[in-house]
Amino acid sequence: MKRILKVCGMRDSENIRQVAALGIDWIGLIFWPKSPRYVNMIPTLVGTMPDRTSLSPVTAQHSPQRVGVFVDPMAQDVITHVVNFQLDLVQMHGHETPTLIRNLRRTLDDIRPVKFIKAISVSSRDDIAAYHDYEDCVDYFLFDTKCKTVGGSGEQFDWSVLDAYDGTKPFLLSGGIGPYDTERVRNFHHPKCIGIDLNSRFETEPGLKDITKLKQFLEQL
Image 1 (cartoon, rainbow, N blue to C red):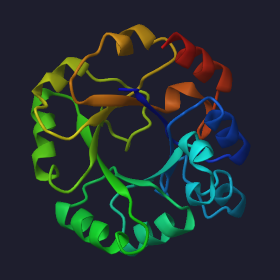
Image 2 (cartoon, rainbow, N blue to C red):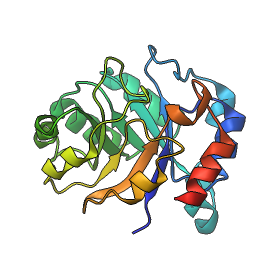
Image 3 (cartoon, one colour):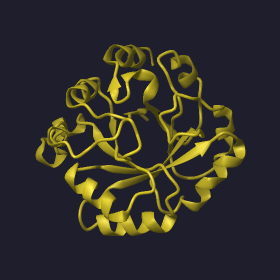
Image 4 (cartoon, rainbow, N blue to C red):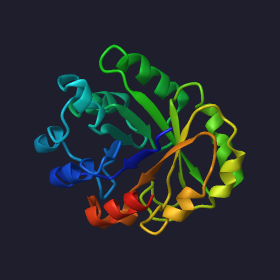
């Protein structure tokens, strides 16, 4: 299976085009106002990545999917962003309840169906157990470093604790993966790990990715 490559925290239109050209699978847009990578309703950004429904099957296959990242949002806020930004996936990165996610899925299935990701903050094996509450309402998990901020800290956690994950849903590995971690990523094995999430350690400033570093990392990987 091809590994999914997600680059999160994007907010500059030209930078998004450059990252997409590298063959990235998922582009993450953060809709949490307290984040330094917060995306406002910028018209030029909406048109940065074309809606795959208007593309040929071949072109659509190589167009990155859009992930909207939310932290404890109001349901209507998620729905509005899914429609306006033509999102393909919704990532919940706060303390959202399973009930909220189930209700959102039912509503969006009639508007614009999306897949759901639940981020789990990790510092020890005990933290992994939080996935049990969400396994029946999300499509993917994302395991990130537990920290004072909400993601994007650049800090890593001990990936060996993920041996404790015995769920059925696939997950992405996140948490401070940087340009010199290719060997570490290659040596990590878990039957449910389907990809990696890259963010702050590839930035020249919050929300702006270093294309050269990303390209070299992907080539080495």
